[in-house]
Image (cartoon, rainbow, N blue to C red; front, side, top):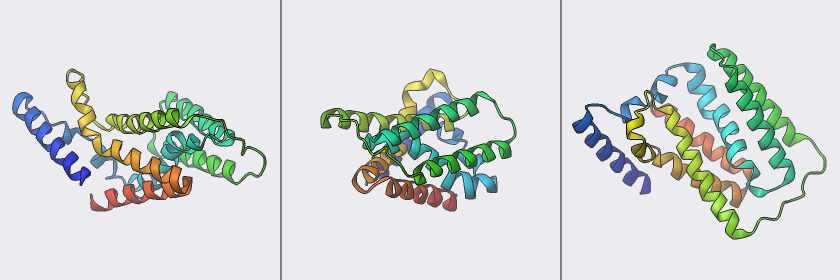
Length: 195
């Protein structure tokens, strides 16, 4: 029901912007272009992106030191890859697949690392909702061009991703990382199959 309400709010907001400025922010979402590429549609969007996003945004939310280190290491590698400004999309996929293999390898590695950092419940809740919000807001980068003079409307256009961030986070905390990851893969796969 909340996704329907978000969809209606997005449509109304986009309609108002169209009537006032003669542009459509909803139409500037480059996801439709991206999934025109079969590699993006059937590999990157439904599998590679979810493992990276779940590792960065939710793996560490059990506050196990091992998971914090994996997430931190993945963030450093992703920032390094982004700084390389790789022009070739296939090269980007190869690096991202290698990163996913590294992440999965870290999970399979036996050893200590089950120590947990104690974080009070009220702080965990603040972190949980802040991370869900950041997860949604990062999807603003799917829109091109960005109309910076209308920065305040973009959070409306990523409301579905903010709500999914909450759902993925809930699945991760309640049932474990694998369930949050599988939910994320399922949603992304459903999205690419209907577009």
